[in-house]
Amino acid sequence: MDILYLMILCSASLAAVFLIVFIVNARKGQFEDDESPAVRILFEDEVKEDKKVDSGNKNDKEEKGENNKIEEKSE
Image (cartoon, rainbow, N blue to C red; front, side, top):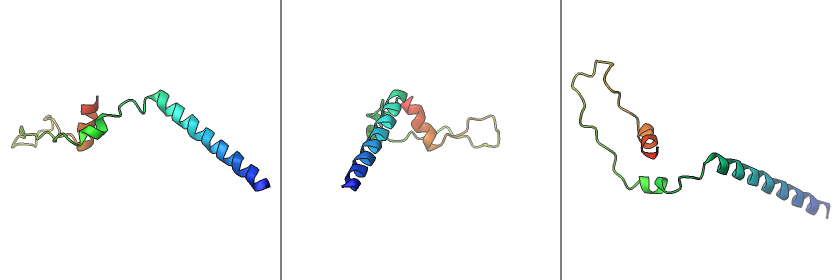
């Protein structure tokens, strides 16, 4: 019977920890944008056609990676 009390205490404390983590993340805005990740897969990636032949100049715009494109669109 003692193990039952221990299991109830452990499960209640684990539930409290998950609740606290959820509240902290909800206040930080983690769950604000729930629509764009599901819709983002439907859009095609933009194709860059303005590539220059002479890419030796470092003042030219650098191509952005895939992750930077996603962050730009979501902002």
